[in-house]
Amino acid sequence: MQRPDQRPILTVTLNPALDLTTSVAKLEPQRKLRCAPPRYDPGGGGVNVSRVIRELGGRSRAFVAIAGSTGGHLADLLAQQGVDASFWDVEGETRTSLTVMEEVTGLHYRFVLPGPTQPEPSGEALLDGILAAMPADCAYVVLSGSLLPGLPPDFYAQLTQATQARGAQAVLDAHGADLKLALPARPHIIRINHLEAAELTGISEPGISARVLSSRLIEQQVAEIVLVALGEQGTLVATPTEHFQVRPPVVNVRSMVGAGDSFVGAFTLALARGGSLEDATRYGVAAAAAAVTTEGTSLCDRQATEALFARVSRAEVAVE
Image (cartoon, rainbow, N blue to C red; front, side, top):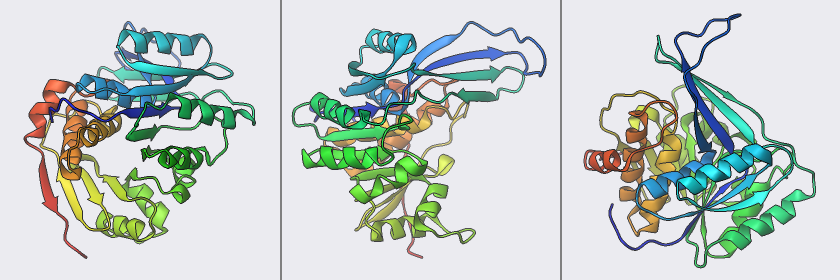
């Protein structure tokens, strides 16, 4: 997926986190646990997507809402990594996310704090700030991660309408109410998992296939492209005219953290470079596969992603 030309991308992170990762020999209750030296990373959906895009040789601008000294630390880390970022100051203190790896089992435990609550009138100014940060001729706006508490529940819907009115295409990777309330604005692309697909369609029949669920979502016109993440089975792609699944090669899984953001970053970059929907999905699946081979909260690696891309396969999905 090496192309010199690329259309502009904006990523939006409204509730970022300073990711702190460490490890202990074994998790035990009621004891003081001695941790390994911590690692700090700038985190949050859109932040990670921009980091992935840069790792893969692309360009994006990251719009990030930050608060307090933690937000300042996050901003410094992004600058050190060379990410083009536009920061918006909000009230409170940017949250911290703690990941603890248990060395004896290889399992990881994630503790995610809530973001700072914002005053009710802040949504309109924030929306104006995001639109002002959009690059000229922006092609894709990635809305990834959770909303700050206190923002209007339908803020992603408002943002989707505003950005698409300017000619950009919204790529939405959100969950729960943040996802559901954005769908009336019909984002260009949504990325969900199998469970979310069932919830959005209202189909609770056991064993219902992702093919059926995604078909129903396309019929409901919630988006022009529906991506259903299927874990080790890859990603199912649904549009009004086609259905296909992209499967990853078998890899040695070390941590699932970062796979979703790696997929979205690589997928969006490939589209911005003019790649087909199939090639973009293959690139995203390759990046996700590369991410799961890394330790802790690490994202995908460019060399591994390029190598895996050649091994990712497309499979047609039978009509049921």
